[in-house]
Length: 367
Image 1 (cartoon, rainbow, N blue to C red):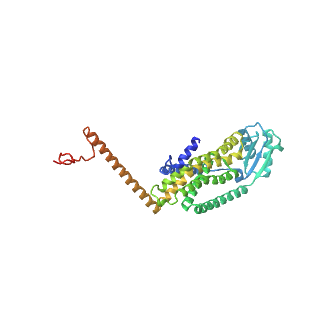
Image 2 (image 1 turned 120 degrees about the vertical axis):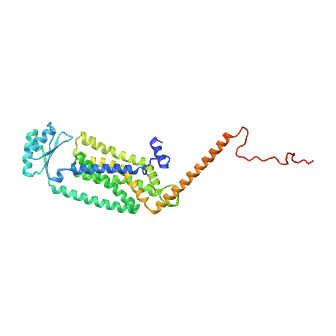
Image 3 (image 1 turned 45 degrees about the vertical axis):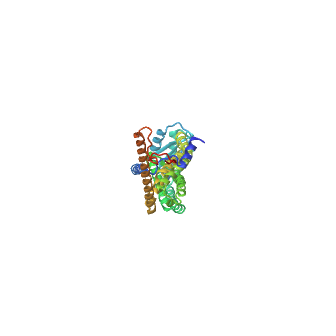
């Protein structure tokens, strides 16, 4: 068995572990700080909405030696609006210009062909209306709302309402962070971004449901025992599934990282950036929230129940009594060791010395 597998087995058996639940206030503080940063970035910078949501024209050119900066200047001068230019993997350019109609598009296309020294017929021009992007956004919001309602209902039936609330909070946490990163980085929001955001919802719930299932099994008949509190069982559930969560997250992040850093960064594929950044941030945030947010929040909600409060009180009382008994036994053993050290050589400590019977006469003989 590998070291990681051995560690996973020891975590599952409870031989080793980290106190995730006990330090939950630290995780809450970190999450609040990250969420506030994301919201501030969203409020200050805003989202860089793509042309699909604002309307305009997209020009795709063949391979050219013209730099991105020069192409941006050329396109801006030709259109009178700010242009966004991306380098494609084949050496061509993708030029986006907002507020462009059909007549203006033909004029810009001709000037781009002259400035880039390419054939006008080889430049593809696509006009996009803002209503199309608005329809996508509305459908995405509708889908997100329906998804969250169904998730809450399912988790409330399969587990309990406290777990459903905790999972919903974790989902909102993940989406807020992902959208905030988009605002801070300045990546363009396109339909690919919407697809990525909707995709991470399932990944975000995966690890959460795995931990919740382990927690549900571990807390069956919890009130009939006096060994573990609910928070301690929740902590054991996190540790028991920790290696599995790390493995699945890393395996999922590796191909997404390839899309983001190689496909988007090296090859210059714009659509890959839109999808992969949402997936990368969402997967990482989902793995974090399932361990540090969702399960500790469930433990907080459960510990407020009268039954769980009474169980915790019984367990703490039992442990205090056991600790006091252990200290008493240790004190008695210390007293015996001290008496043995102080006794003269040959003396028997701790045993009563009985005087010989018969007042000095030998037993069994009469005079």
